[in-house]
Image (cartoon, rainbow, N blue to C red; front, side, top):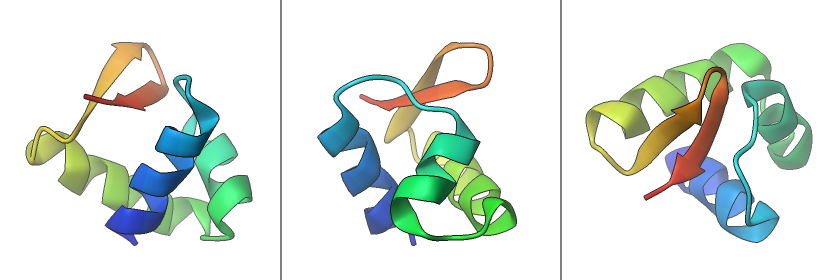
Length: 56
């Protein structure tokens, strides 16, 4: 799940909202939210502006 989220962010090349990540990966939004929370804790992604996420 985390790899799919990271791949979606890498391919997009810009910050994405959780809903965008969900559409790209095919994962449901709740799963994406859990993955984002874990990746933020691991400092692999960050939040450049409210409700948008990008890779570090």
